[in-house]
Amino acid sequence: MLQTKIKILANKKIAPEYYKMALESPEIVRTSTPGQFLHIRVSNNSEPLLRRPFGIHSIKDTGEFEILYRVVGKGTALLSKKKAEEELDVLGPLGNGFKFPVAGNETMVLIGGGAGIAPLFFLAQKAHHLRQIIVLIGGKTKDQVLCEEEFKKLGIEVRIATEDGSYGHKGLVTDLLNALLHTSLSIFACGPLPMQKRISIFSSEHNLSCQVSLESRMACGIGACLGCAIKVKGESTTYKRVCIEGPVFEAKEIMWE
Amino acid sequence: MNPDLTVDIAGLKMKNPVMVASGTFGYGEEYAQLVDLNSLGAIVVKGITLAPRLGNPPPRIVETPCGMLNAIGLENVGVEKFIKEKLPYLRQFDIIVIANIAGKTVEEYVELARKLNGLVDGLEINISCPNVVKGGLEFGQDPALTYEVVSKVRQATRLPLIAKLSPNVTDIKVIAKSAVEAGIDAISLINTILGMVIDVTTRKPILANVTGGLSGPAIKPIALRMVHEVARVVRVPIIGQGGIMNATDALEFIIAGATAVAVGTANFVDPQTSLKIIKGIEDYLIKNNIHRLSELTGSLQI
Ligand SMILES: Cc1cc2nc3c(=O)[nH]c(=O)nc-3n(C[C@H](O)[C@H](O)[C@H](O)COP(=O)(O)OP(=O)(O)OC[C@H]3O[C@@H](n4cnc5c(N)ncnc54)[C@H](O)[C@@H]3O)c2cc1C
Ligand SMILES: Cc1cc2nc3c(=O)[nH]c(=O)nc-3n(C[C@H](O)[C@H](O)[C@H](O)COP(=O)(O)O)c2cc1C
Ligand code: FES
Image (cartoon, rainbow over all chains, first blue to last red; front, side):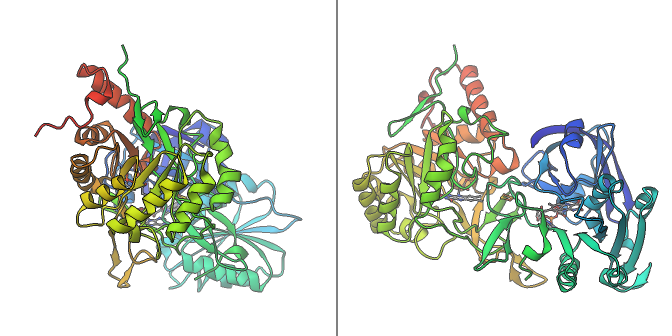
């Protein structure tokens, strides 16, 4: 983990509300694993005050990496205005990433929706030489389906589901999962909470191993403030910190509200 | 010649006046990779209770204009585990360690003081936590209870004692005077200010605890006013805190009468803040030809 100023190489809109930002830091590229995140300061003054967490989306051998983000509020709006050559104060890599490759010869099924696809591409980059991977992308509408081409370029099969049927299968990603149940699977999910919850319940019903990458409001990002707690299962209530024990958890650990 | 930045808080000889505030720096180890702990004036660790506490359900924090609300609910490992597992780590460093203690009853505060006696360099009595049902704020809002807690803890230990006061009172001077009468050595001002945020789509409060404590730059003017008020009525050293983001902020508190300052929320924004402040204070003293920081303390011109 380090705190550095790193240079923006590019910041491009890739879909309505979604951006990809390329940055340069050989140290971060060298030390990160898929699922880890960066805590980024988006302003030089006190508004907005806190850093914003983003997963690492992709890396290159040349020491460049990308984040993929959706503009949802003032922090991400500010980020979207940043230009190449500007610098960002970045803390990271932080947290625990995905555990892979999985045991045996299970197929890795990566499931993402919206910006949730972000860390899964990095995972695919690192894992596609090791295991067969299938990517399932889900969302309410076509707008939330991102990175299809990028996965295909790695030679990975992509299947798509949208709730309104505007693209791919009309329905939920768990429908697509159903169709894969004849092989042995291990699931890696990131996306909106209802989707993660659905996938977690599905995987426990079918006894599949499943890792989810969760979000929580964060202040420090390094385990000191105890602000990012989520409920986990246990004999009595216990909490874990998303920033340091997560953001990737075994789905069966989580107490879904 | 470098100016003299050392300060003395109840016999604690600090290298410089910049401490890190309770609950914003964990037990030190979380930040050790990013900040040279040996450079800090002192560390005040996360509030400690007798038994471990789970804390409040999430969401526990929410950002607000120039600030944040927190309702952590004093999650901590409990005093035994703190002594066994957290303290030895901090003891490797050349740093003054102050334990922030919180109890539900006067007896609990006394018990905590006994257990920590001789193990830490000082105690900060937290009578101002806004996020727990019992204890905390209850004591800090009542001059008689403040007196009782401080005097009982005073009898239990010879450690330097700091009272951490709450801004959620009508007249902070009354509480400060009670603490001094009861034998306190120093006063920390201020803890967070009670606040809330509502989500208009769900009509629910964002924090599961409904309310939380406001911290960050938004509260600095209030904190400064309170330090100013208290500095005029007590003689014990004051540790100023509340929204300090840079050296200028820290200098304002010192000029208002604070002997030392504590950096809280700013640690989340930039872990280097406290180190930058130490440097900034030193630069200010050199520029203004002041040889000792103490010459600046309480030098407010009205
Ligand atoms: C570990 C982790 C990884 C993430 N990775 C990505 C990613 O790769 N791409 C992406 O687009 N988004 C990601 N997010 C979500 C992203 O951090 C939020 O969308 C962003 O903080 C919103 O900031 P804002 O100022 O635009 O929104 P506002 O709503 O104005 O933010 C207000 C406050 O709420 C917090 N907040 C708001 N939404 C979220 C959220 N969903 N999760 C956590 N905190 C939130 C903000 O950090 C801020 O403190 C991630 C979140 C976490 C915890
Ligand atoms: C997340 C968080 C946790 C805190 N926990 C404690 C605590 O355990 N005990 C305590 O006395 N103060 C606690 N505080 C209050 C701070 O120590 C400090 O007094 C307050 O935040 C004002 O300073 P600031 O605006 O610089 O943060 C906490 C503050 C925050 C933001
Ligand atoms: S964000 Fe501070 S502990 Fe996780």
